Image 1 (tube, rainbow over the protein chains, first blue to last red):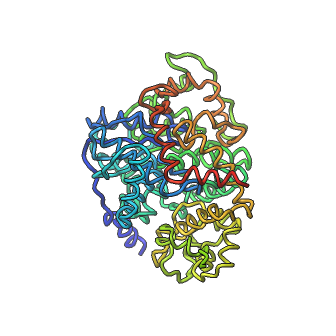
Image 2: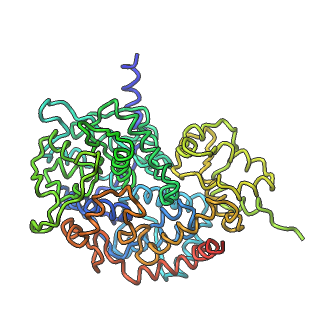
Image 3: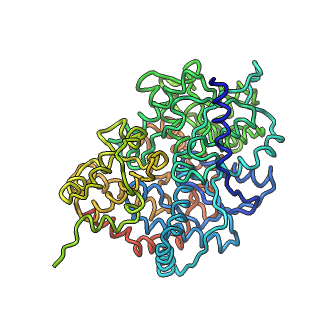
Length: 358
Length: 203
């Protein structure tokens, strides 16, 4: 019976399709991604420009979208709407009509603002007035707003043909078991704006399938990573965050995943760092042999499989060691170069955690 | 003379208008809520209180820790069978709690000032919600030893990773131009963010 049900469910994602422009994008960077995975966005642009021949513009004048402050209850929605309008104004100045954001919180923000302007036209008029008064700027709403993972998904078949490695265990020839984690604000707010909707999002599962891996369908697959905005920012509330990540780790562990792939900068970070915390505080590890389960972003995974040097794409700044994954795939790398500076300079190494294997 | 009630203010908020249609109190939001699993928080109860339109009960809610427990993941929006969004209602309650000064009555409400002081600095000084210089393992021990190594060698590590840390050029962690920061400040002033920050300082 289950064999009859599962394939039907796996096709649910096809009901939710969205327009993804083919080329010419203005990139909105992510505050969190720049801080915790500082090489990732440049890798994303490199893949788009050099592997796919696309045009993407990186504007130094852009700012935060204010999403984390808005969802922490710190600033009014009017402020967020006007900051978003300024970003759109910058896009217009640069001569672009398509907008791609690297952050899932931002993607939710841009989607929410545009929907609000649509449903409450008086708010659009007010935003125009407030932006003009405060900055002298005018703006138009982009023709197309997507998340960066949408672009990698759109071109997955083209990228797949260029891969040097696949999500396959080199020794056994079996597909690697991949947990996908979709940031809540990618599709839970507006299911029609995400590939596959909120219940069966396919944006990362599609990459997993295309790149040779096997999806892990575990009970807490759609559960939030536990960022919680103000709950994480307040040290005394941070139990909210680690507990929700632990709910996910405990639920996925029996399936022995080889890899977690995320599209949200915050989620990918929490699913990396909370494994370190749980290991050090509770002595629990989720990977094999005392290691954790590597938690990587879609562009990091794509770059790895394309054959980029793992230390050029910033995998040394993850707290969970990625080497078990590299070894399973058979990726060539030099372990001793992991923590070197530019031109091979020795700049020391991080201290090793007491429990989590490195 | 008619005195504007808390409910009058709440109903002006578009987040409230969109968040509460007609709640049937089924509890689906509570079942899916990550906050309900880890704290004394029940979005179904919040929706019940606001739907009853009892001014005194609303005042108690605005003065409580309850409204600050939500993590705004918006999981409730997806699953509500009546298209309500408890997290939007929470957003409107938080805004009114600050506007009315009732946030001062709860511990979690008062903690908003601490978050604001850090994040307003990051946004207005650097142009980012969070910025590298303000993150350390004293405040964020979960960053782990790898973060200490990055911070101790920041110029060299960030250069190795191709960043534009504090540089006047495009790229990761760049110095955001003064003209952009001036725009951000002017927007914050024009749209009420500065006024909200001032309210939060009035403990």
